[in-house]
Length: 290
Image 1: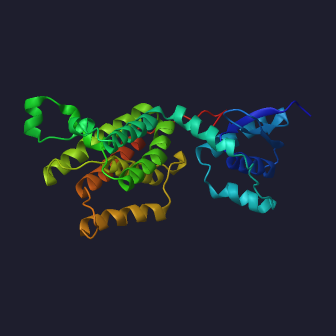
Image 2: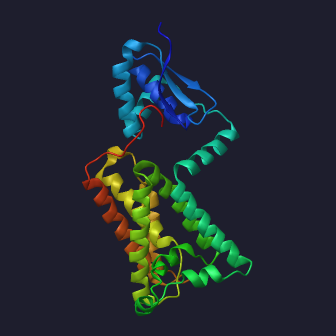
Image 3: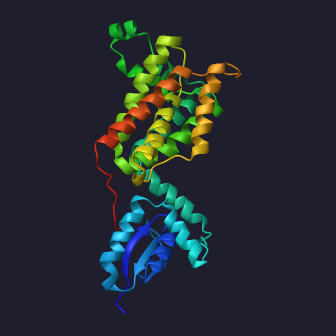
């Protein structure tokens, strides 16, 4: 038997286990191996003669790990995926995500800082970021205010909801397509949704939700346009967010929602997904470490 060769490594255990089971079912001798580093969960190839076939199958898995055939292989084998109960892995994974998604992390930190400052009575950031009528912006030249509302929040529930979705979806886009793509989507959706809301209701609004709905639209449509890229949203989540969007227009909630920003943001995200998909280029994925 040859010296074991690391075929691929993952930051989570489940995909490593699933790929191991699938490759064994395909007649390739591999084993799961845990190591204490960034990519803790490895799939080790035991026979070098299987390398070409194993690498091809591993690349297919990395591009579309949610394909039902992998779970089916686990069912056929009769094996269960037993996860290592190590709390330190979660902390390590969070630190890894922070490093891999610096723009996502930065926007999250900025929003939190601005909100916490307001909680202790420091309102200067709010005044500096509040959007102004277009005619006033032309006079003052303070065009950063077109982005400003995306960074300010008015309640714990408001900021918690927005930052949860920003972190969940933003890091997926940034890790998959790079910082520049998420930056472009952020600026595009924030400016367009903020200006649209300004035209409808005036300057008294704020929140990252226009951008969040852009992320939802982007990931949702990429899952439909390019399912092989591995980005998607479960249908119940999509339905919940769309229903929440409609509820905002019914004006039955105790808070006033920036409905125009939400709708325009969602549209921006769908358009951005189309832009990414028509580039006809699969996202860059490191085939040896994932």
